[in-house]
Length: 124
Image (cartoon, helix red, strand yellow):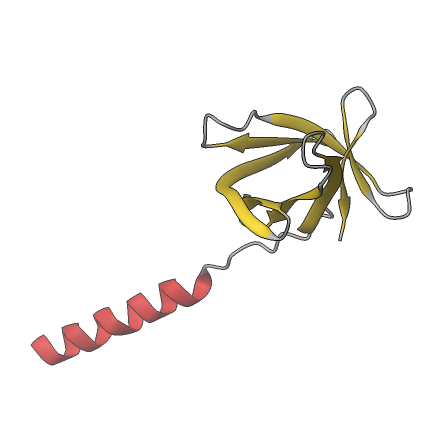
């Protein structure tokens, strides 16, 4: 009787675990978005480049990375959500401000725009 009960328990667990599925997230924001900028140091007359990356994944999480002259200078994780075409990016780090952007798919390349219309990042 114990063997039969154990076998039925295992079958129930397998059946229940196979019935659940993870919904697929096909949001158009998924992927890597970048912002590049260059600056010249007035003292040394050297040019330096800064590259910021936002990597959005399908479980509403992501990674923000900042590079200066190809050297990683800062990174942190973030959460993101979408409501009525507006994407809210919430950082867990106090050094980075949360931001609300909208996806401009008609542009080539696609861009993320701030509420005032300025370009926040472009799709890589």
